[in-house]
Length: 378
Ligand code: GMT
Image (cartoon, rainbow, N blue to C red; front, side):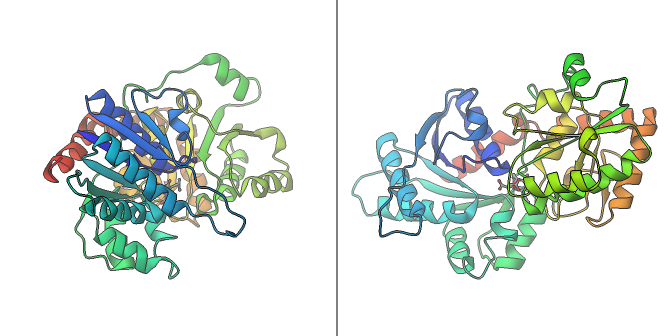
């Protein structure tokens, strides 16, 4: 099959999942094209047989507004024509579902050309935070409903889509996935020693994200501060984003400078996760929580908010610990318990890896997308 996948290049779960899907489709013998404004974050190290088509949005002095929808739709049309695409798979509805719809309608007007099926995969904030905003909702709903198929990454997001946008299109749940061969614990004593010297610390707590308000990096520091009162722990935050400065303030206010380190976004997160003892994800909203899945795959117990799709990914008390987003004391108590009880920690690490291996590996999920493409005639 010839598949064109549209995604954001920036640091975010939807771009990561789209890139991995393209890579796995290429590995399984399909022609995989990725359309994005730049090289997607996780494609940089290894394109893995995926053909990248970058989208250029020209500037013009009259425009104060970026014209990305038009340039993206045009790029999709050109790629579909040149490569005879069977499928256009838009990841993140805003505005990718709209550009894909527009591209398909343009292709429909051409004689004899192939008309690709349009699939939209909803990732979370494209519905919960931004897509349902009154400034966008009518167009987003229309674009979703005009897709030939719609998928959501969790049951919670499927419900949110219907409730918040009132969409009519059936939404199928296809969860996120990982390359389970690549995502496995590979402990590096040197890295652990550098990030968490044994003479000073007994535990390493990690958080990875794009430091947007929804991730609540201040709450990460808040939970860590409570842990630090009881355990000689160190916190490593990796990522960057709008709340980076807020986090620095928080660290300074609480005099945590020596115990917290901020690293840049990691192209490969496995080395860092593999030396961690605990992963914190106290998000306000999380339709799936790909970062939690990555941590579980690397045998790192997760303490997270009981919001959105996280209760589908994590079973409280078995593969992770879930608390209401504002219950920082509860998150800290669970963290302290796990970091002080070796047997409980080992059991949760083992069960987390087992859950990922049994339900979320590429081999189980990518065929569900292939089956969907085939159902649509690809
Ligand atoms: O918030 C992010 O990390 C970015 C955002 C995106 O669309 O890139 O993430 C959403 O999609 C991820 C991949 O499906 C999910 O794992 C995240 O839970 C979801 N984020 C939110 O719902 C806040």
